[in-house]
View 1 (tube, rainbow, N blue to C red):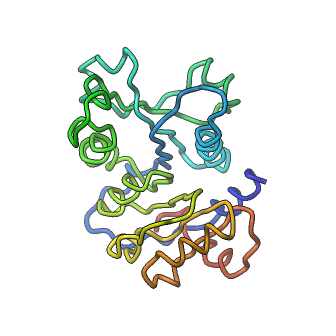
View 2: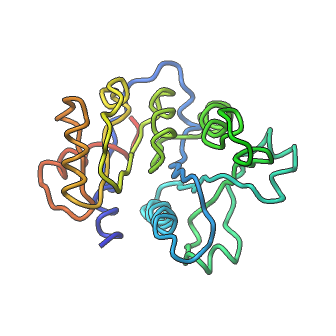
Amino acid sequence: MLWKGLKRVLKFKYNEPPRQERKDFMRDKYIYYTDKISMQPDTAHEIHDVLCANAAANLGYSSVLVYPDQGNGALNPVRWFYPFQPKQPDTKFVEFYNAQEKLRVALLPMPSPIDRIQGKFTNSSTIATKYYLPFHLLRHTKIVHTRDWNFAKASVKHKIPVIYERHYFQDRPFESEIVHSPFFQIAITQSEPVRESLLKKAGGRRHLCFASIGDSDPECTRATQSKIESGS
């Protein structure tokens, strides 16, 4: 069901909002950002993220799974200044997630004390959205797909088209300037009740398509069929 649902949601042409003097020939990456990949059992959301990025790659997009790296390699200062180096995942990753050869990964180094000392500027989300996104990812990115709301918001503010996923009920209203932006055009859920909770918190953005992966809403399907592929 996941593969069929993602194929239906992703296999559409994207009418990209107008951009001024942007070098779009460089912006060819379908970035799936997740805040954690642990390669540990019983991590369903992490597995879901890998499968989504993998599905996009298999549909022909230049898909890159981007996530923080807090391992020993994060201590290499060269990587801080040249972090976006998409590569094939290693054998351990491939075997654990059953990743296929078209998928690429890019690890964003998060050296200590990031996420080890509490504070705004030692938080991996802040580093990802305030440093890596605008200075290293932006010039390569055609579209962002993520479950991370902070990364989704930052992407919209940088005029990157966003596919946002939400797997739980939305308990607070969405920021109006984000959900009313032309760059925030689709949100994906896994159930109809969650979809309804998103619609209620969308601040009147009723024309925004909130798609449930397993649904067969023809209106939402038609709305999504005009959104992603050509970038024109």
